[in-house]
Image 1 (tube, rainbow, N blue to C red):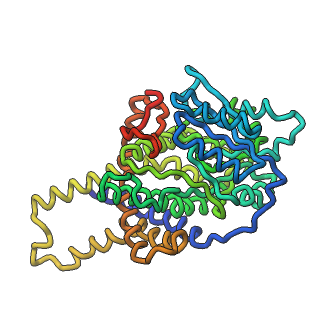
Image 2: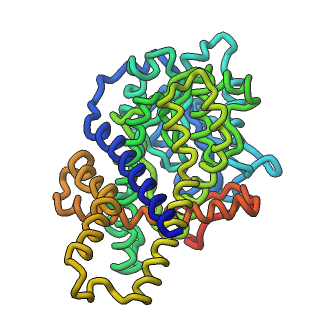
Length: 453
């Protein structure tokens, strides 16, 4: 039985190392592109909000300053705070700002439903003779802040200048990555830990996820995220005609939309020449709640594997990449169980036979070889991203910092064992409600706000 688990662990490790290699090389090779002309499109920003009074004022102001031609559609999902009042203040003075209000019991049922409300408001507001393929919808988080060149970066011939491209995703940065005291006066240790957690989130999005998207560019399966997601209105209408609504009930509604775009026969792109900044979480509890929701959404999207495998719009490489991503939570859970069994067997063997290193008859290689293999195949696939992050994203940081970030990333990714396990428990107990995570600026730090059980 142990030999079976050992073989299984070897297969998982080799497969994962091959995948890391497949995303690391494209990340290093990516090149900048020449910007396009955003004036050939009309732009509409969808910003779903629920109790976002702490951040929405700044988001609206910056969006209007940086993108004066864009319309901003704020969806108030029946907030208990002053979100709607803040938006109304802007809407009264600016015809480019629109408030879409939702009320319970129809409100607070998920981000997808809020985005569908914005879509309905936009299609009602638009004149019927407007060419829908030239209307671009961008989804932003309530704290989202796009770079000045965002519209130009997605208007290139490779992206929306190509009529076959239906959607695009830009890179995500963490806006508070250089905050020296993210927790204020809570003490040196707490602030140091919070800074490291913020840095790991920034590194994850700007290296590992960019690498994943670079691989997906080659397999034509770029995934969409919930912040900095661009889609043609004509594509949203195509999805609505087939599926009833553009966005659906998955807790990973952004990736689900990307799957629907591909199944509809359109292409998706990832753009790394611009970015959208968002607030990294400083609380482990809120962080795990967020990642549990993402993992559960990934599990829910596994239902699309059959449609992807049978679709004429996915080639073999696209099917393999998409299916690998969709079964990843299952592989992570399997890996967790495998490591647990092997670790238990090792502890049992040591307690029964004694430590091998203390046996003078055992060669030195029997002790040092497992350590080397552990560093190469366990720590190595994550540690390599540290120096790459410093070289590509934070050149002011030292090489030593890059090495330290790499080791920290190896420790950081252990969160997946917690989030995936919690996600499967939620699936088993049929808990699929959407949870809104508190912003750092909110005075209460008591954890996430559950919208539905």
